[in-house]
Image (cartoon, rainbow, N blue to C red; front, top):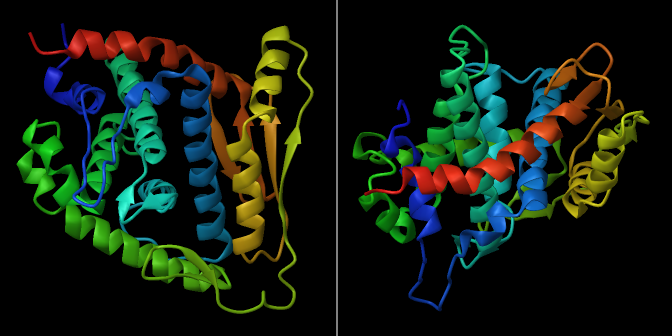
Length: 297
């Protein structure tokens, strides 16, 4: 069997994790991440943040070092890490989101390896690299609290050594980016704070268009996705914080050739395929088995 326990021990450790701070009892229960709707919603939220990051990079002509796909990943992950902090520590709901997202990446990597379909030349980092990137940024956000996880060796010391610096640098980059594209700024508590009025002429808005599906499975999925509060919140927050000269339209598309999402800079369109949400739904059902398979003997 090609499956390496070392690669999935991150998920295993989160399954058994209870994080306690000195300030108060702050526990983490991973059961939420195994809920299919939560799994789909978390990965869809990351997908939209990733594609919106592409839009911002292109529309504002933001210089990028290290590849735009990796930059978009980092922006999306850091925005998730800023969400709902509790006395400087990530809230359990955010940790569950990270578990759902990292679990999806590992399941995709597992499928690629089984089918010998890993694409090494693609602009996107390998899914297993994305798995380790989210782990490192999460650990780097509060290594004192999360050190017990590293001791379980889901994050090798060679990578963990500089994760706090990696997080700090990425956080500085996001703060710099925010000043370029928003009339909000990130304060010392890592909250968005309104500093001034939006500049004149920046009246663009982000909106979602639900393309009517014909397949019953897509109709069921559309009904599910429309009920996700995080999608409405994401669009509302983006429109509040981001300064846009032009509108951005997110098309929820039922007529794709496969699971995918992409940004089209020529038309200012983000397309998200229903097949991608269906892949998330499929992998949500596989996650418990993956964890059980990776438990140490």
